[in-house]
Image 1 (cartoon, chains in turn green, orange):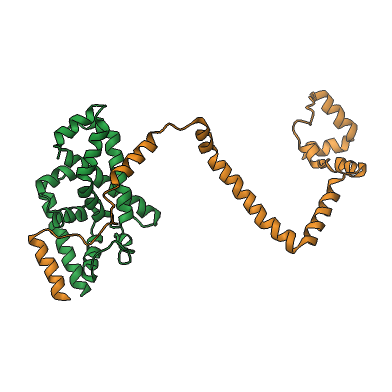
Image 2 (spheres, rainbow over the protein chains, first blue to last red; image 1 turned 45 degrees about the vertical axis):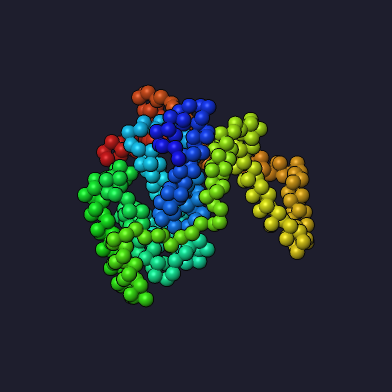
Length: 181
Length: 154
């Protein structure tokens, strides 16, 4: 498997650009897909957002200054695309910005690509009720086990604030699950 | 059920969990091709004909909407109320033919100024300058000496 540096070098060369981009997609597609999927929940939405993410990466690859790692940059684009998608979806559903994300979980139980039982559905429901930032931090820590130091670069927030966000999120989820018993 | 829920929660504190989602079979196998096709599609130059159609699209859509609304109203009326439409058409024909008498009536009825308008209009009132001698002559002509005396006393 090619390293990030090798891919970046090939991306800058016109003759190897397309093949290098294909390699980049192959390497990161699954990790980015699951990151996006946990934010938007439905497969179709995740597919849309992932494709938009890679199109944006292709368009902006010349502007990538390598100040952060390729993985961090890709995750940041995917996160922004996911949040933008959700906010547009909220507008289309006439849901105010302050309201919970209940609407994104409405069709989850009947989604053919939801693979969980009732308890996992309730856990997803609890996660969906969190504010966007707490939800992101919780998912990245809980499902992907991403370190706070890496999260700092992706979300551009201090590790202390991220830890506090995770703590609040976990507490809210626990309370919600208890209240649902 | 509660135990299982507790397990999910407590276990999650120590190890990463798998999200309860799956993807369609073979989804990841074709992703590169899909993305490449989309990038190629977006990069393809749009012909001037295509641009024109894109610009005209909203107008064409609006025209089509009006046509559809007209059809939705006119067609049921022509099928279910043909007499009503025929009557309306006759009335329209009557109003369309204008005789000389109609023109004359409309011409005279266009004079809508009242006497009040004539006198109140500042533009149409001529300004006449009257000197003192003329005023005295006028008063002397209109009033007799007794009237003038009465005016002066008052």
